[in-house]
Length: 432
Image (cartoon, rainbow, N blue to C red):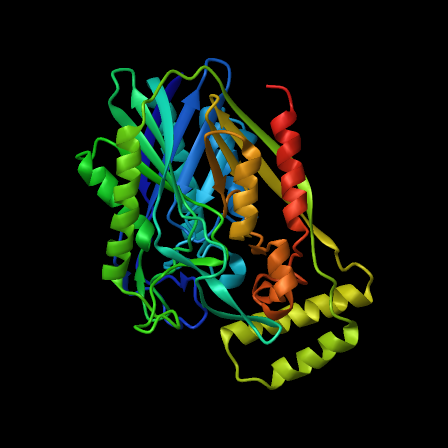
């Protein structure tokens, strides 16, 4: 097998809207951390796959299609063989039109990522692959049960995934070329008061690893199923989350990086004879929509509320959903692409285009039946939160209204868990 890596800076000019928090009312004023896109291309003599990681909040459907198209034009790597993973940092530029994304920046971003994949492909040489799993107990679930429903807040009793997964790629002499880390927690330490571009803790995970190897290694990061999980930056009494600062990002990023480095040092890369990629279309079910009367009442309430960006998006949601209901075209599910990458016998990546809840991620990892199961959220699309069955039972789907900001008519239901598991089982069983 051959492998190659490349990296490119994707930090935009100061002044673009900094996504991740609708309470952040000013554009970015500076740069705390440079943002990067990084590419790893693997080839077994017959098949070629590319893994891209980027310090952005999401890969929208449009950005995914355009970037894959450019990559295929430059390298011949088919779109379904390209995994595009956003870290989901909440301190990066808008990438969706509804959020005020810069068309010029999106074009530049797509071109830079395609160029990074081209360079990684060009840099390919004989390679070995190893993997391992460590642990970093730095996260906490961010939803509490309250009065028959849920509320925002740290919940030490709810599920968390502490795994630090590591894939190490060496050259033929055993010198590390790439270290790819997977960890399931929101990159949202920095809050609405932050007006600087930043990769959040993810920048420090990658930066520490690269410093240890004197810049000779490309460190990459994929965010796992952390849709309902945050880094535990808490008030002194531990009762609430607080806005973190760059020092918090540095501290927690270093802890995760240290564990990843330990795992990488204990890993023994070996020859891999096969790489493989598959995609599958699935229908992700929504919860039952409110009635037209209920949405009309909500629309009247929203129109009386204090004006804000968030209120404007919610009003658009109410009008669009009401129209869809009246015309009989309100959807019961949303189509999505899931992707499976296999690298030898030990490593598998299952990529999902949304904010996957941790319990679903744990079940997917168990179902993959490989030593190193990478569940990658925020990949190849951006559909919003994908809750677990338990979250729906707790009342999360009734409580959360963030789906309105994305233009989706309703929350996804906990039944997405079964749909994703069924898709994974089917893809794993297909002939290799």
